[in-house]
Amino acid sequence: MAQKATLIVDGKQFELSILEGTEGERAIDISRLREETGLITFDPSMANTGVCRSEITFVDGENGILRYRGIPIEEFTERPNFIEVAWLLIFGRLPTRDELTAFSEKLTEHELLHEGIKHQFQHIPVDAPPMAILSATVSSLAYYHHQFLSVEDTESLAEAAARLISKVRTIAAFAYRRSQGMPFIYPDPKLRYCANFLHMMFSIPYRQYVVTPEIEDALNLVFILHADHEQNCSSSVVRAVGSARANLFASCAAGVSALWGPLHGGANVEVMQMLERIHQGGLSPEQCLRDAKDKTNPFRLYGFGHRIYKNYDPRAKILKQMCEKVFAQVKRHDPLLDIARKLEELALADPYFVERRLYPNVDFYSGILLRAMGIPTNMFTVCFAIGRLPGWIAQWKEQHEDPAGRIVRPRQLYVGPVKKHYVPLDER
Image 1 (tube, one colour):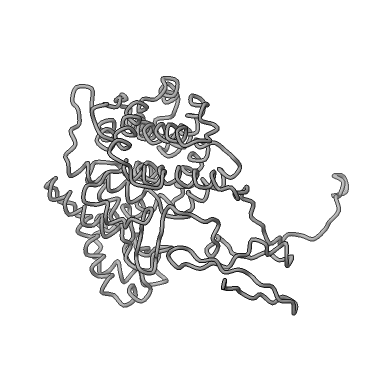
Image 2 (cartoon, helix red, strand yellow):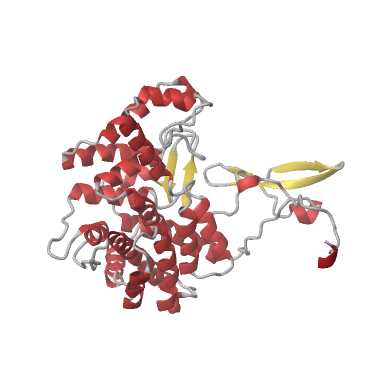
């Protein structure tokens, strides 16, 4: 027998269905609440509101679990392949060898930008934020691929997804080269996805950048760990824009803009800036923790705690291990990594942090890892966007294919002035 929740309003009783997901998460169905009671719910930031049913990603913040289509995130670390994970997220299953090969060939086929887009870069200020360039250019892809403005079948979606996933790294690399006043480097069809991105970032006309297997695996892993994360801010924006039947390019460009916010995609930048300040200021990790616990002190400890995770972020564990591998391979000492390690060690032994469940999150180590690859701070959020793009496409596809889907239209609790009358200008 289906369980019900009972709501009593002004002495009148209403029965609300209780829904249950495949992992046991339960939700009270209020989809007919206003129709039946005249009331709406009030839930700022929708922290307690399920806005959709989804089969893509499962997050259990209490136990530190993240799974893509049911597969634990840890199982992608042995031979990290971002394109395989992208296919899994978008199409709902792991690809066969032939499917993966065919999709990879599509990425290679569509890695170049239309020359019209390339010329647009010449008119962008050299100091333009890379995320601004990325958002505008992803949206402008619709100029040149209008055949995908209406995607109604799997084959068309695969073609559109291949163009977006392939071209976003070319756009990102060109944005970086523009900011450095350096010539654009075209993609190399012989290179795999992540190696090709680093080639476009760092090669020069007379010397090609050669990526090591450790660095290539690390970048694949960074992209995989950022590929989707349930109904986060940018994914919710992509769904909301897509609910108006906006095309995939416009919806993903909106996701880029949401990710640009420092409270979302910019968190690892905050971590790196904090670690730099600690290093340059000669602060000890012990003093930093004392300052962080002092409410009168303006110092903030970034990279600890998470809106969802009340346990150790599983992505942070994986990135920490990859940091050790990469720094061993590059044979480089980074004092910021030493500071981060010590901060984590102290925090995990400090009752203040343990009781409040303030564990390291994905942003705590991702910036250090990107820095080890030579990627500058202003490109961190761009790399986040490249990784998150398959998740956005998957969310857009799922929302688009939902037969019960409606345009997203939240309600509000109006607290403005009551009815007033217009006053003519000469009487004001």
